[in-house]
Length: 284
Image (cartoon, rainbow, N blue to C red; front, side, top):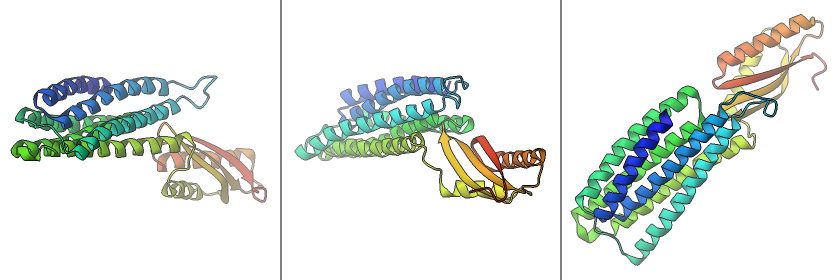
């Protein structure tokens, strides 16, 4: 539902920005319209990735399909980088030639409307993404935020060029700023996605939190071989705990269950826990 709302808003904004850029004589607003077109593409990627990523585990994918969401986030990042390079090259060439359009007030009004609409869409999408813990929806939310930030640059550039026609080249500078903002968001999204796709370890504070939870359980003498990765924005972990070798299998299993329960209570976004029980003196 949240992505469908985004599609409707992006279609309307794309049409308004394109019309405003053409009839309001603003290259920056036309560049912003191209950014909104990229939003439509990424909305489609989000729909596909979310549907595939939320499928239940099956024989071919015993760990689930959450990496499809991560892969979709990477596609969003790549598309943002591509859009930023295209817009930036065009704007830089205009700045170099010191040429630009002479924007009018309608372009300024549409840029202002875009700021309000895209920031509201960011807040709505980010809230849903955090609630269902979906990295691809959160990535799309930041795509909306990048559009809002780019519209701020457009608003300032178009406003200055409208107030003082001799400053018309500021419209091209605004488009260049738009491209840099889009590029940063795209690189950040791609970097996070690639860390997850390559099974990079989480932040040190997350690992410290996990170790604290494990050590807090009575009967745990130590632990080793802790491995944590992220899949679809949620953590999957495996660890060996060391217990008294004289304990029965049932007692060792009970301690392992206590560790698992404590981890799920104390570590946010933890999806899967695998615990191996080793007797003391055999944990090498």
